[in-house]
Amino acid sequence: MEKGDIEKLQRGLYGYIGREESEMHSFAEVSVRAKKGVICLLSALIYHNLTTQAPFQIWLSIKKNDRAPNIEYPSIKIVRTRDVKDLGVISTQVDGIPILVTDVERTIVDCFKFRNKNGIDVAIEALTEAKRANRLEQRKLWEYVKHYRMTNVMMPYMEIINYSG
Image (cartoon, rainbow, N blue to C red; front, side, top):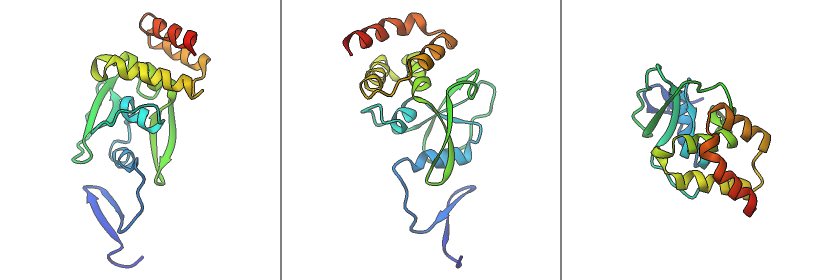
């Protein structure tokens, strides 16, 4: 490695000059700075290619009492939950950097759970698209629906999607 090959991106984050970055590189940047956080909601929908939305913030789930990470860029939106990593979180990599992101089923349940933050239309679109693309594991989805006590909220939508699809 020659002097000048690495540049400082922000406090505590460095990268190679001229590196290729994927469109999801901002997920990696956030994950490096927020090791306890999980990419969720609209950002997870982008990761799983289940939305037409284009959020300008990275949605990050952290435990209720954890301190929010101090990240200058990219902009983050914090969602506080009881059990961040307990159920439906996968470990993957973006540009060689490990990230935690909610799986398809958990992402959909979270979208319904936090429908006041991102809109019920986003949740319905995600459920519809996941069903259309055959990306849902029904058993896992029901497990999450019950665990997060979302049966009464999600049941009507799931019946319509299953009936029409």
